[in-house]
Image 1: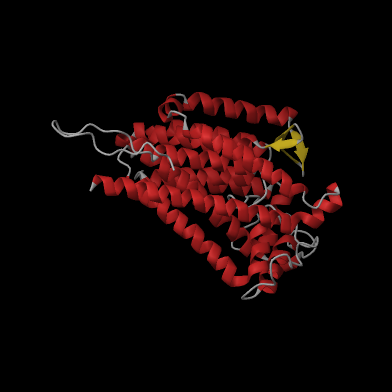
Image 2 (image 1 turned 135 degrees about the vertical axis):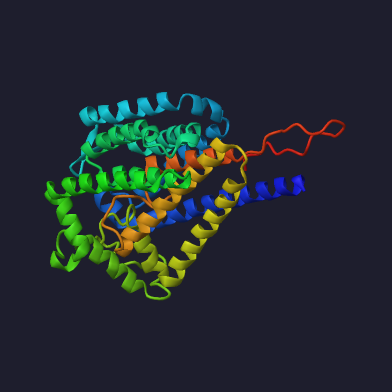
Amino acid sequence: MNTITNDSLRSERRFIFLTVLILTLFGMLMVYESSSLYAYRTAQDAAYFFKKQFIFFAIGFICFLLTLLVDLEFLRKHAKEFLFVTLVVLIALLVIGKKAGGAKRWFHLLGFNLQPSEFLKVFFSIYCIDYIIKRKNNIKSFSTLVPLWIVLGFMCLVVVVQPDLGTAMFWVLWTLLMLFLYRARKKHLGIIVLAGVIAVSFLIAFYPYRFRRITGYINPFADPQDSGFQLIQSQIAYGQGGLLGVGFGESRQKLFFLPAAHTDFIFSIIAEDFGLVGSVFLLVVFFVLFHKMYNIAKRNEDEFRRGLLFGILLIFFLEIVINIGVSCGLFPTKGLPLPFVSYGGSNLIVHYILLALFFNASRIETRPVEAGKKNQAVSGDWV
């Protein structure tokens, strides 16, 4: 019975790995398809973004292999230190970071842009899950959660100053859902939600570009050439795709109509090329991927590892829902790439690190058995 379980777990991990690999290769094709003309105009090389994405994939895969060898207990033990260093880097970014689009979110190194806030997905998730697990018996006490909210609040403040309100809101939502999963009191979570709504309302009301983004989301046709332009062009891509799509490489919206076509709105180009059928098929692939990850997470007996597995799954799930929801017009515009598909170096590398952490946490360890019996069949494999 145990051997069958081990084989099943190994099979599910391999399915997840192959699915993610196929999604990445498909993503690179879509990056080329959606960015070739823009790349030729800006860099005189139609494959400019495709080549960079391939380099990101190679770096991400190396990081994936290295992360498989990392001791999770070491990461757990030093979670505070890793998070502190990440926050220090984010603060330094405000001084020496590269400014683009009115925001300082990147370091420019060796011809590539590095976005440090992506690494919060690794270090804050480990810190938060470790904090919750250690205090799960007192999780219903509001005072127990205060230190966590202070850390989260400071982290969000640093990110908002960049400015990147969307990332701050993402982490508040993720933390709320993790606490809900561990049965924190709903009224305590409600207090945080109320405080968050007040803070976000203030940040939107006193910053005109954010307010225009909200009004553009509510009624994009009220300002079709500015705040509503991107959403309108995304909807046009969906409409042109129809049921079966216009065909791979035949997208019209990539012809400088849809901004960020190879990054945040790549799903709109997928919908235009492959239509409703292709879009639904991709959603089914994501659903099956989540189902496999959920099966692995719920069967893990170690509390910290199980929490980390669910935490990583939740990161992937929220990112996909938000990205596709934005491109469909369900949510206000938020610069969040589609995992493993959209163009973006830091994002792709960090997602391969998270995938490796998922495999690492789900690894089956050797366990002692009853006297007189041989050791149970054990899988030391990660994939």
